[in-house]
Image 1 (cartoon, one colour):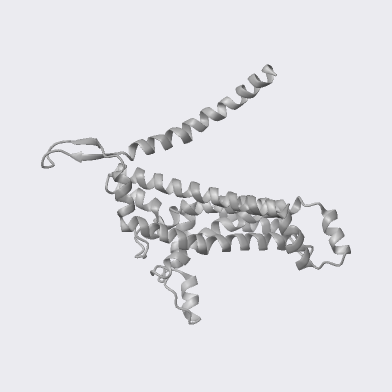
Image 2: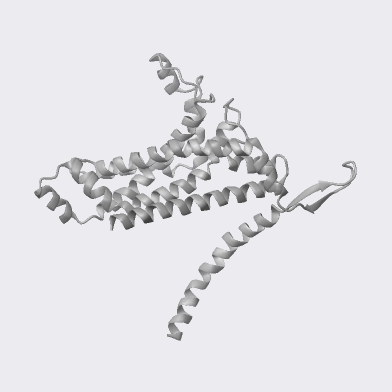
Length: 296
């Protein structure tokens, strides 16, 4: 027994050391940094000094309308993006898993390829496709009598959602398709013998059997949505877009740190965003856990 305990401790030690180095220490440093601020002495001719301010940075962040509006943008993004992603990825996976599907390998690769493109490159590609003077897509839409400004206040959120869908739809489709392939084929054959049609098999048998994968993708998507940063940052740079430098909480923290050199405020905003992500993750986990209990 002692030998097993020592072996387990030996094997787990590298993980906990790495976890402490890349997770615990940075989070602890961010919390510590959020309790201080830098102030200039005298009339501004002297140097700066670091002053302990307690929870003042948190109060300042929560009292800033731009920071609060960033969470409103995230809420709209999640309500728009998450259902489209889950439904689209699941629908594509079910189509590829159906008996009527042909060239599965080709379509898997074609749908997954956008995920292999770095987020910054993907955002730059779509900025080109959104720009009226350059984009063949916009020109085709205008020729068909469809006028839509992707950089307007009404079009900014759909533009960002479209980029994120293009990047992540194929990736999550592969996860769902792998889960569908793991289903015992004898179950599906028995349902077919009993007279179940394709729609019945898909939504009454296949989808319930991959509920764990749905919950996992949903959880990771919620966490990833709260980290929205790269796509709106690119849209903010020189496009005339309605996306501002504080459009999301992540962009607010970035602006506070690197444009205003207010690292305490940036750390406080980051900690508040991390707490929000933790609470939402806990809520999603509890919700999926209760559904599993009811299903059991």
